[in-house]
Image (cartoon, rainbow, N blue to C red; front, side, top):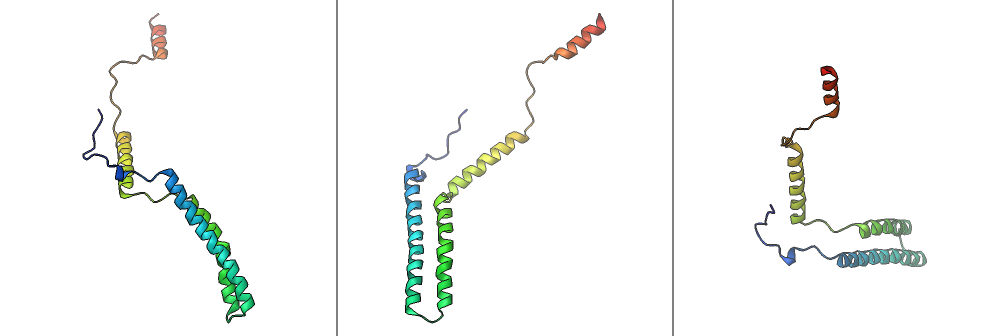
Length: 126
């Protein structure tokens, strides 16, 4: 029997489309890679301007140029976090599965006859 939800499903509760998720990840990736390019340009400007604490600034720019691509790829490949409703549905599904696995198997309505047992019994009576 199919269970009906207590309240109807609303279209506003639907997850964002795959295209919208992909577009937002692309925007984040391009933004982070633009910041990386900005670190490269800033490093070149700092070298020509001869600012105080130049090694510190160059180290920060280099760190940004190394870490930002790694972080951009991780963020671009990640899906958006689950909503509370999705987490609750996952927990309910896990609970249903756990309950189904822990319940004893129902007794069959029919008797299963093992062929080997029948042959052994026949051999003794002959």
